[in-house]
Image (cartoon, rainbow, N blue to C red; front, side, top):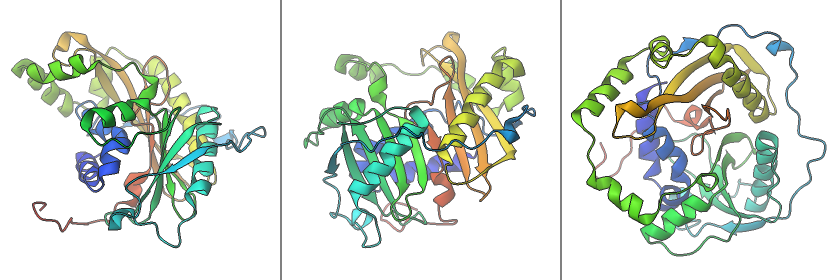
Length: 319
C-alpha cells in the first residue's frame, strides 16, 4: 500500500465541500491511519484451507427493497464535479443498490432510513459515482462546522457505486456506530502536542515491515488467521458479480494507540487485507481488532483503482 494513495485521497477530498463534510470520514480515517498501515513489504498470506472452493456470496433470498427517504445533496448540480450526467442512473435507483450493498455486507436493512445522495464526477477518476450516507434522521441544511461534525457522527453507513453501471466501489460503517467525544473534548485536543518520543515511535513504526510489526505486537499467524477469514467473507460480499483471485492475497497490520500522546497505549489495531477479483480490481478491506468487523470510516475500498495515472490537478495553489 503506497503512501501516495493517501495523498491522492486527501487531494480528492478537497474537490467537493459535501465530500469533505459528509463523506470525508472514510478519507480521514485512511489518512489518520497512514502511520499505522504498513507501507512496505506486504505480508503474503499463508495458504488457507478450502477457500478456493467456497462459493461467492449471492444476494440473500430474503432481501426486500426497503422504503427509503432519499434526499439529494445540496451540492448536486452546483459545481461541475457534482453535476449529474445524463448517463447516470437516478439517485433513487442508486440508493436501492446501496441498500442491497449494505444488506449483503452487513446483513442490515435500512428500511425507513434517510439516504443522502451526492453525485461525483471528479476529473481525477475514470468513472462517476453516486455516494450515499445513511442515517436515522434527516440531514440538516446548516453548514457550520459543528453542524457538519454532528451530521457526520450520525451516519450509520456510507457507500459509493458506479453512477452508470451500479458497480460496487466503497462501503464502510459510519461513525454513528461509535461513541463520540464531546465538544469540550474535541476542543481540548489541539491544546496538547505530540512529544518527540511519540513522533520518533511513529517514524520507526512506519519503517517496519509487516513481519516486524506482527512481532512487535506479539502476534502469531494463528492470531491473524481469524481476521483473514473475516476479510475474505467481506470480499465475497463486496465482489458480487466476479470471482476472487486468491493468489493476489496480502495483508498488513496497523496499531491502535488508545492515547495518541503515549506509546504506552499501543496495541493491535487490526489488518488491512488486499484481494483482487478476476478482472484485476483490487479491494482494500480494513478489519478492526477484537470485533473482526469493518473499520468505521475505512471499510472496503476499491476507489483507488479508478485514479487516472499521472493526473495533475490544474488548480491555483496546487502543484
